[in-house]
Structure formats: structure tokens, C-alpha cells
Image (cartoon, rainbow, N blue to C red; front, side, top):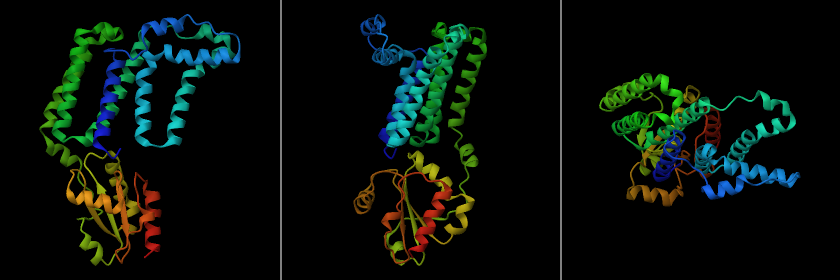
Length: 322
């Protein structure tokens, strides 16, 4: 998540998978393979049941493929094995729970909802959810104007897709006029909002704490307070989340005992390369702490998002080392 290229890749993945769920294309195995698997008859054994479960996931790939691809992309961005295991395990439970229930209580087969347009509607809602995630990742990478222009173009694309291929969303036929109007209004609003950056500025007034100073090695050496150095970038989503931690009310009192320095790593520079080599910076956000003597407290370095409660504990540990 500390690399703009990878964040851009996540945007593309979520955006394409959203289009897939809206019916533009399907993520599936070759038809010959799916037909062969469809003729498979499992034996009445534990191995047969296990093999049948694996194959059912392959056959269901057009429906679950976009969600699984998006989930894998997100898990890879966190590099958290425990989180990845839990998310994929939960996904597997969701896929298999219905078969476990039906196998245990066979009478439920008669109460299952009939397939119909509501299933297409569910895919449509999931597709919109992936679009929201896609633009969540895109926002830190772009300027205010470019972000809303891309959003407007995407809404217009959905508008045109629906006009040309309404059969893909038959459940919306009765609401065609409402949907067309909504997409068009949102697209026009986004395009207008793109050229009114002062709206965004007024809505996102920077907090009055902490009081940032530009990064300087000389400030670190001559300062009489312990120092916090935040190395961040405009395209870093976690950096923006971490700023909320810095300005939290619970941090204000203890944070006033520090000098806050910020280094802007949005664009590459010789100074940034020197900083990376000196402090082994591998990704963003990267928050360093120095004591009153200007010594780097490497063991307290923060390399990801942290809640105000945990960050306050970290500041307390830093003060104890001064």
C-alpha cells in the first residue's frame, strides 16, 4: 500500500471486477473444462464430497470470480497472513454453508428462493460495491479535479452500457427512466464538482493540531523536545488515515510535548532516496521518533496505520526513553 503503482493496480482490479458483475464480461474457466466438470459424478465418500466441493467452486466462477479476485487483491495489499487466512476462510464458509445446511436438513430444499431477476440484482449491488472500493483506492492517487472527472466518465459509461444492453439488467427495466436519470445527474454533478476545488477545501479544513514543520536534519539535532517525523505521500491511503490519529483529541495533550516534522514523499527526489537509505524506509506511512539528543529510536518506528489508543501508548514509551 506504500507504492502508487500497486494502488493503481488495485483500482484497475476492483473496477474491472465491478464491470464483470454488471455483465460486461464473465470471469470463468474455459467452456470445455466446465462441461467436463459438470459431467463429473462424485462417489459417496469423504474424498468424493471433498472433490465435489472443489469442483463446484470452479463451476461457479462466473459468479464468485470477481469477488474472489478482489478479495485476493486486497489481502495481497495488507501482507497480513492472519487477516488473509480469516477473510478467505470466511469466504469459503459462505460458499459452503448452504451445502452443509442442505445436506443436514434436506427439507430446506423446498424452501429455497426461486432463481430469478433478484439474483441479477444482487450481482448489480455487488458490482456497485466494488466500484466504491475502486474509487476509494483511486482517490489518494489523483487530484481533486482528475478524480471527479474519472468518476464522471465512469458514470457516463454505466449510463451508456445500460442504454445499449438493458437485457443484462432485466430487473431494472421498470425503473429504467429513474436509473438513467440518476446516473446522468450524478455524472453531471461530478463533472461540475471537479472544477470547484474550493468546495473540497472548505469541507476538509485541516485540524489545528499537530503543528507541522518541514523536515530538517538540523532541527532534529538542535531541538529540545522529542521529535516525530512523518514520511508520507498524497497517494498513500494509510497516511491519510493516520493523520486522523495524529489529530485525535486524546493525542493533543501528550502530543504537545513533541516537535512534529513532516517529509513529503509524494514525488521522488535525491533527498528522499538518502532518507530511504539512511532509515531503511521500505514503504509508507513511515513515522520515526527521536529523543531530545537527536537519537533515532528505531524500535519505536511506526510503519502502518495505528489507532489513537495504540499511538498514545507509543508516545508514552518514547517519552520514557528521553
